[in-house]
Image 1 (cartoon, rainbow, N blue to C red):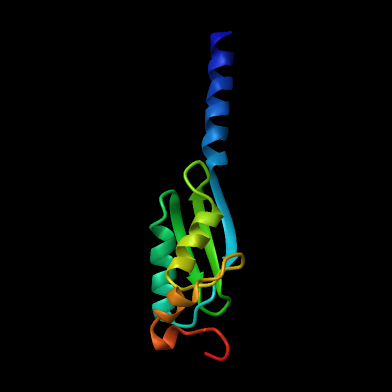
Image 2: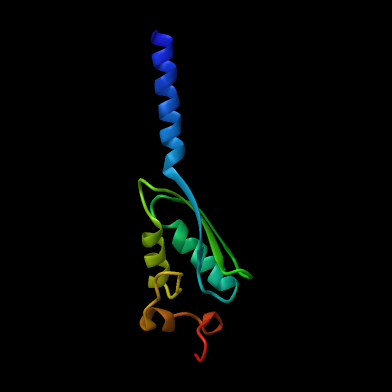
Length: 109
C-alpha cells in the first residue's frame, strides 16, 4: 500500500513540474541582428523565462517559461519597453525612437 501511495505522489509531483513550463510563439517586430540580440536578451531577462529565440525572417519569438513565475504579458511589456512592438502590446513612440536607425521597423519612419 505504501508503494502505491508513493508512486501516486511521485506521478503527481512529476506532472506538476511539467505543467509549469510553457512554450509559446509570439510575434515581435524587429529588423536586424541588433534587434535579435536585444529581443532575446530582454525576453531572457524576465524572471521565469528559460529560453527566448527570435527568428529574423519570421519575426517570431519562441519563448519557454515557467508559468508560476511569469507570463506572456510580462515578456511583451519588457519588449515594448525597449522599443519592440509585439502581437498584443505596442511600444511607446519614446521607446521606439530610442532604437538605432537600422532597427526602425515601422512603416513611414
